[in-house]
Amino acid sequence: MKDLTFCSSLHGAEHDQLRQLLTHVQFDSHSTIFHEAEEADYVFNVTSGSVKLYKLLGDGRRQITGFLFAGDFLGLALNANYSYTAEAIEPVTACRFPRTKLEKLFDQFPHLEKRMLGMAVDELAAAQDQMLLLGRKTAKEKVASFLLMLARRQEHRGENTDMINVPMSRSDIADYLGLTIETVSRTLTQLRKEATISLKDNRHIEAVGLDMLEDLAEGL
Image (cartoon, rainbow, N blue to C red; front, side, top):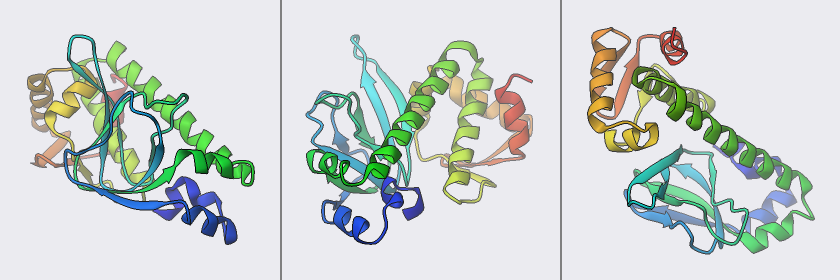
């Protein structure tokens, strides 16, 4: 995981200086890491577990905007407050950095700031991908795209993609894809009947082939 974290661009004494700033923190399942609109005093690097990010709409509904895993960075704020709520899906461990002290290191380590900027760009790209999911795709295309995203994230972390780990609930998936829970469950059942996936249990899905998911995600 060290190679995936934003501090992986530092070496030797630089890395030691950064380590002096961090605190190792743990969060239980379903606990809140920070709330939307809270002062953005800290930034976090997830080292294990998974996190969901969401915003509450004016009518009380919840829109999940993303999922983060080991190696991902969260808490980057363009202003003084967090723009979303972050909640642990399962037990999470993370490195926590005081934002003000971290920003002071940017003058010393420009490559650290560059890497953080790269992560912010990745976050923006993920948000754009979600906009495409919500706007143009059918339910089957959305679910296939979601499973493919999880598989690609596993691949990026160096994990086997034969079995896709799905730590989030069907409700979380529905709120992310803009579908109902019933539609998510019905679509997964349809994919199983079509022999595209095999449902091992609620948290593990075996894909017959990622190329099949890719075709479905593209509407082929």
